[in-house]
Image: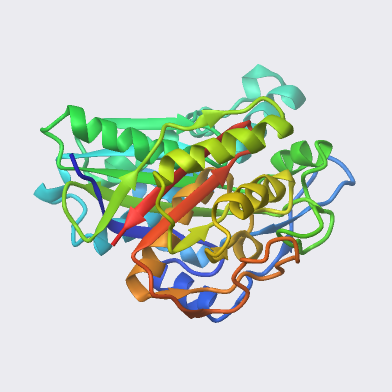
Length: 374
């Protein structure tokens, strides 16, 4: 059975739609960096925020007027993907769609606020308005309701690679349930100081307002974003190989696991380009060693220096960007690219391409990959 990407959508700090994001990335733009709000200690971190105006229209929906940013981002990207697929929310065409969300940290902002009230004022001060947004599947339920989807709604929790696991899960659902026409896969993430501080304790959060990839590992900067893809049984962009993901148990172990998985997913074929998950941490070296060994002449694009490490959203955004490269035959240049990977693409250029590899190495000891063919 064949599966295709029928529509793509995204919202990042560079724009509320794929059209605007693509234009900015090809122009070499970097999202604005801000100081991550913090009322808990004197430690500070930077992040790439999505401007509120990008989600203002979604926030007007009564269903999500009290929702966290993570749900609003998912809704914006989901609607963008449906529109790209030529589908109208709430129509008969969306009645037989399953919604699958990929997230990492969940609604941390509302979770922190909810438990802060309990710690400071006692259980009686906990707001029942905040609690529903603390559960992992809140964004999926909101988007399914807004789209008028009556079929299944799932949430997969993982790390930066979880979006590719969600896409693999979508192909499994479509294989087993012929009554479904499509799946809408959404990856989303909101930025929160608690998350950055946790990664900071592991020396993986940058202390500056910029980081480079495939160079000096100074840590990453987190970003808010959401990506979405509509997956169906026909189209122009075929998903040729997907996997549920593979675990590794140490950084040394990750190198062999990543190489073996990339061998499986490419099935002996050389992709015309690679979308990398490099983010200024150990991930860069893991991918670099695999790319140098397996793909010596294949150009690599790493988008995270422009929009940040978006965790649950990042792998889905990788698929969105791979789809855009195949559509437009143009490969953006990687900002702040170090000297360790010779094949890194540094400037935007024309790219005659029919196949793509999306790689994702996650913080929580997961690696995954996906291939597309046009």
